[in-house]
Image (tube, rainbow, N blue to C red; front, top):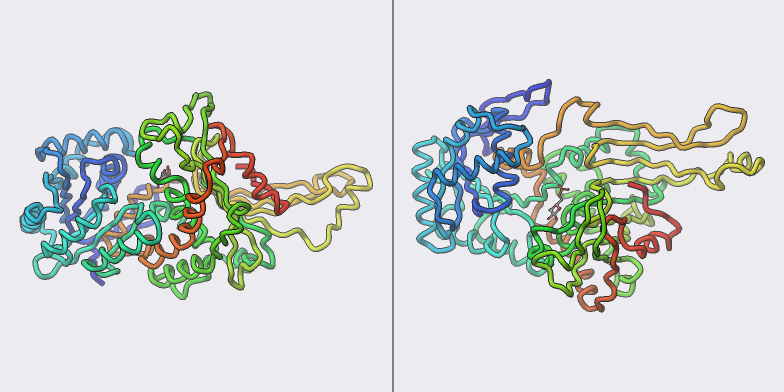
Length: 521
Ligand code: BG6
């Protein structure tokens, strides 16, 4: 084991214990950017408030902006004030964290910048006792990744300092734009670091409810026997967002929903829902099974693109009483953009567990509400005993309502099982009822933010919740042919939908052609 565990600290409120990582220095590239302010510093602040940061710890922010150390700390304090989930900043916690923060104004791609960083880290090791352990975090635009990695290698920073420490690198999404660029980035990173040092982020894996997919499946004996083609009619995965793309038009218009959400978050959810039981709960065993599942998803053949893929783009509309401008009017978006803000796909999985079971996935911006949900819809009973009873008095539906298991990932996190029961009365008639578990009420405490968990895991050297190199390539292998087919077809194939609606009408046909419907979210 590389990591030294120095203490185990329970969170307030009978929380499960998280182990406190051993000494290390965290180096954030892109320290003046949005991710650092919105996610990383607030997560570090929460960890500090819970005494989960190492005793010997330092944060080194690196960016080109000419800022003094105090200016940088001031900015980071403002970020914590704006984005912390813990409410007003507690002075003693902030002071403790602020004391660990350093800033280096440098362009690390140039050799001199990398040398200055190396010298600073050596000084930090001596002053803070961080023992030559370094966790690098690439929070820059992706175009800078390869250059920074190369520079770290050239400056001798790809292994720990002081002749005894370790080095790890966290790489933010997007990891590549397509299969070819992802492979190239993997090669560039692996020329400098070894795979076990590389932590590719998908923040969905840091969400408690996403981790609970595995706990739910493999920690109980009642659901897994039904988790296969014999009992499951189909699976749906939906990630709906009620925001448009204000503020990020430049990035998003080059990406689109398939790259931004499907290649990573939705396929990650699918791999956890569909994978076989791992041989153990070790990182490699779990990731082996996820990769196997991704490789078993059948690539959509070119002649089936039209009926199995659908893309849409939102036009002006209203969400929750707020008027929303159309996507093409967003700053940074081309006025004739054909970038998709909505995607629906039908996928199939070629393995013994899932052969013949369709998986419908959809995600979109500017939909009526924010919700992420996985739905397992079970087959009908083999014989509809009660149908005749319904028909006899001409009441009730012609078919039974399907049994469904819903894993609500966010918000209102929970698990709901829907089945049919006879309401009191003389007649035999089935009505759907729901058994509902809510994480909030069930565990009586708030879940940590994804970035808190992921930072902690990377500090401790646990890569279970990070994406391995072969996994990211397997996901791009599925998505790239769709991107290419879409690029080759004409712009009319992008279906408009008003902001505040549930997406293009044609999405109903994508699932309707199989005589199924999207579940109501
Ligand atoms: C990010 C995407 O990865 O995930 C965003 O780039 C998206 O476009 C976000 O809004 C959704 O994350 P969450 O945690 O809010 O569901």
